[in-house]
Amino acid sequence: MRVLVIGGDGYCGWATALHLSNRGHEVAILDSLVRRHWDNELCIDTLTPIAPIQTRLKRWKDLTGKAIDLFVGDLCNYEFLKNSMLQFQPDSIVHFGEQRSAPFSMIDREHAVLTQVNNVVGTLNLLYVMREHFPDAHLVKLGTMGEYGTPNIDIEEGYITIEHNGRKDTLPYPKQPGSFYHLSKVHDSHNIHFACKIWGLRATDLNQGIVYGVLTEETGMDELLINRLDYDGVFGTALNRFCIQAAIGHPLTVYGKGGQTRGLLDIRDTVRCIEIACNNPAEPGEFRVFNQFTELFSVGDLANMVQKAGEALGLKVQVDHLENPRVEKEEHYFNAKNTKLLDLGLQPHYLSDSLLDSLLNFAMKYKHRVDEKEILPKVKWKG
Ligand code: NAD
Ligand code: USQ
Image (cartoon, rainbow, N blue to C red; front, top):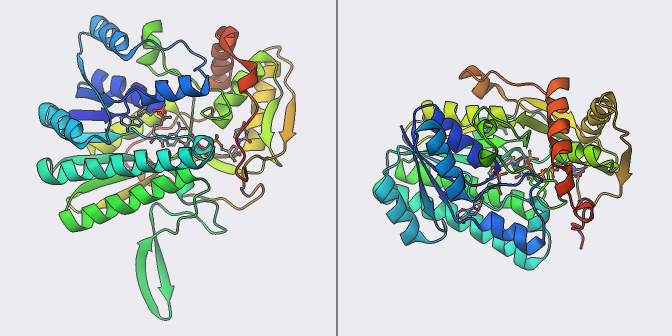
């Protein structure tokens, strides 16, 4: 299969591009490298020293003999996108290419607008290229569990059957996102759903939970293939951040009470879920939604697990409860379904002592690169 990985220089995209290439697919990466630019603007850097994309790809080719094509440019540039896709002729398009940080989208008006324009316009351009030139291709779009928010009822996979005044229908599950970033994903979902309905496109929206970990079979092959691992208060996510905080002796930064519960998954499962979605395409006209996570944890649970694993390695780990910079429920019901990917064969890597151990050891290896000033959150939802 020919798979175009949009956003293939990023955390999930890089691991996925290599995994698909290793599994024998013809892979191309399309990326504007804007994430590296945002890091520079914010004066932050990944824990790990990531090589330039061209160096990464050359190393991959030298190691495995497998070539990955590269298209450097912006998804929001329609001509560039169209020409790249006409050149590559994808069967599947895996779309990771968005601004993905909730705090980044809440910095100020400019960052909210940038996030929504970048994400919504990029996805809309892609839908139009598909309609004009690739009506049979399968779009595998990265959504987020945060589209649903934290309702007081079970979360289904995309749709819910409702009975109202004696009539019954299956409708899109209600969305209550918690940041302008998460809202951009909801807007994308609506646009993709509509495009499937009117043009007969086929799409899978993967409502992914928080990804943790850094090593996959492929990115671990060589230091030049190393993946990014964000720890800063803007792009760093909960469990990854806690491991790096533990490694440098910084108190773990639980926001508020810590009862915020989310779906999480290992990056080794992210790459596998994408492969499963590509291998089992949606039907023409179908807008299919999978919830892509393997376990539910509260932020407080995650901090306690890292504390325990860190202490077993001889680290002294303190858990702090900071004033919550976000507006979100800190204690709530959360029960989300996630059976569709399991039914298609996903065999999860559950969070284990050995994974925490390896992530903590990894963090300790690169801890000299940590800028402690970037750990505490600086962006507040209420400004
Ligand atoms: P990332 O920032 O590491 O990677 C995103 C990549 O997309 C970057 O390389 C960036 O340069 C590129 N990009 C952004 N806008 C672009 C544009 N307009 N044109 C071309 N390239 C563009 O992010 P990630 O953590 O790999 O996340 C990838 C996707 O997965 C996002 O859509 C995100 O919403 C989703 N997701 C991520 C997580 C997570 O925990 N990291 C969890 C759930 C969902
Ligand atoms: N949190 C802390 N301490 C921290 C960091 C986060 O308590 O140091 C809390 C947050 O307040 C929040 C939860 O942990 O309640 C998750 O925050 P996060 O920064 O780990 O994740 P989030 O902002 O939700 O975004 C991340 C990715 C995003 C993806 C989303 C999946 O950046 O791209 O869409 O996870 S989900 O959370 O399921 O929507």
